[in-house]
Amino acid sequence: MARNTRAKKTQESPQLNIGAEIFASLRDLEKLKGIPVDYMVDRLKQAMTNAYRKDREDHKDVVAENVVVELSEAGLSMHLVKTAVEEVEDKACQIQLDAARNYNPNVQPGESVIIPVKYDDFGRIAAQTAKQVIIQGIREAERGATYESYSSKAQELLTGVVQRQEPNGDIFLLIGQGAEQSMAVLRTSEQIPGESYAPNSMVRVYVLEVHKSGRGPMIQVSRTHPNMIRRLFELETPEIASGEVEIRNIAREPGSRSKMAVRATREDVDPVGACVGPRGGRVGAVVDELHGEKIDIVVWSEDPTEYVQAALSPADVLSVTPVPGQKACRVVVPDDQLSLAIGKAGQNARLAARLTGYKIDIKPASQAGEPPLEEPQEEAEAE
Image (cartoon, rainbow, N blue to C red; front, side, top):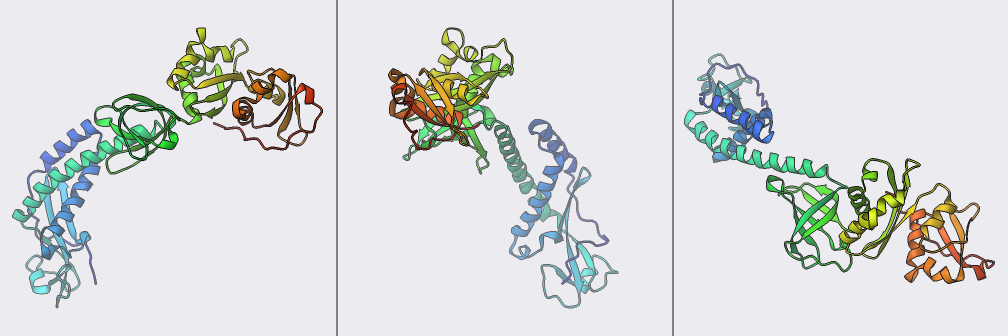
């Protein structure tokens, strides 16, 4: 059954003389909200087509492609396209030949004919629809702009205000100001153990991901991600921001202790001293933000023996011997340094292994000749 939307016009569709007014409004909207005029014109046409089809019961079966809306600065009009036939089988897209010739006296069976929509009906539809579409378009554009704004902030730090805590422990934060305000969720799994979040308190968070939702972007944030430490030091340390100091690796047990490996890109820069800051002010600011989490800062090295030795700080190390053919090493420490090298519940050795990517077998000097342990250690956390 032909549903051809191309037809020669023989009768003009009635126009509403509001084209110039609509385009003036759309141009103002583009300047204010950044919504392209062409985008809004297309939305208006589509919405008016849908409104016409929903307006009355006998319109609902009209094919959308057969409803044509024309909008220009000269005016606004709407018409239907139907196929002329001897016997009508589908009123939605066909018109009896004699009736079709009221619009085009020369139309033949199987040809398309244009049927103008009555001015009164169209005027009511246009007025209601234009208002709804413009309001909706503004909201969608604002949500889209907000999403684009926050999606570019993934892997960055933001500050939010605590709104509420869900029964499952998730925290919802309000981030941003004015039209760019959005909700962020700090899942229980992304919260530092032992921290509490009072309503209306301000919390600094690391942005994991940004998702679109019906009410605007939903931002997934974290306070446990290793890169939160990276971003905090970037804020506090000018040498990192300028590229004179690089953060190479971070191993973290949130709320307890972290290790960070750094290197200088210039020989005259002390990378550890730059991160510690005068009187420990820079590292102290990061520790305060993380509510007392201890941070060991060590020098990164391409030499695994030097790197592992540094990573086991603050313990003294007598020797580091790489295991041939394995990413592992044997470490010997003074007897009185063994507990410090291993750390409480093995934390220091565990973080050193994660930082360097090496399995570390630690022995006191008095047992240095015994066979090494075969327990696997965790791999390093890369950026």
